[in-house]
Length: 298
Image 1 (cartoon, rainbow, N blue to C red):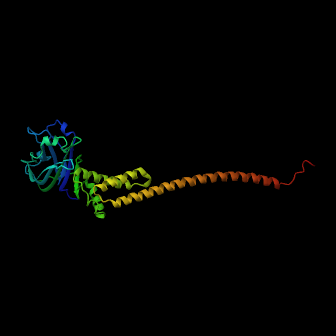
Image 2 (image 1 turned 30 degrees about the vertical axis):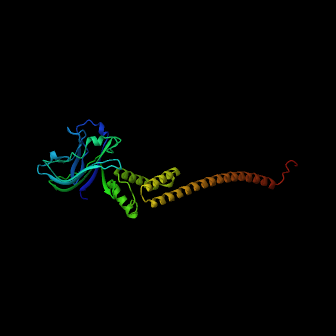
């Protein structure tokens, strides 16, 4: 399997306004067999702008002749659905003299920290980086390493984990109408509704005995909320109805089984009484068949 030459990386910085560090780094991630990381100066550097860079993570340890060319996009995500995010994009050669890339003028700290600006949600700043490695000079191959950064891929305007792409691709192939009328543009809300869709499918794939009618009622409400924003999920609603019918049949069968067990228990008790009565009658018959005794006469 070849190296992945393009990735979308999501980095969430918690408690952004409270940070006192001069600079912070993301975990390293690998694109095109090369190590990268993001660098942020959360308080600026003598000016009120956020410094955000894409950096070659291990550039100090590389041989002097190393070079790599990449298409880069850095995005400060506006988490308000009606406001625009801020991004910088460029095609850039990275080398020993220029191991990082970023622009300053787009990311005003005053705007980012402003109340209701949309850039901070629950104190979290979300940064998305898109990197496509176009050319590599030098032996820079590295192996994949664990990372806490969430790697996502774009599929029909939805950000998915790589492990989700095949499943969603098959789902859209069978039901291409799913998102034709989906109206939301905010990437966080789009991701949230896609996550809800995954949860609904996983819920309805459970065995009927693992679900309650309350679970199915909540699934109905969730499907309605998704329909309200434009999802076409008639096929999934059909599955929900089928599951509800199976659940009702399961409950009806369990009730009938209980009734039969109770009837059977009653019959067993009657049989036991009849068997005891039969034994008594057998004793009476045996006594009646016995010849008379004349021991008291002779």
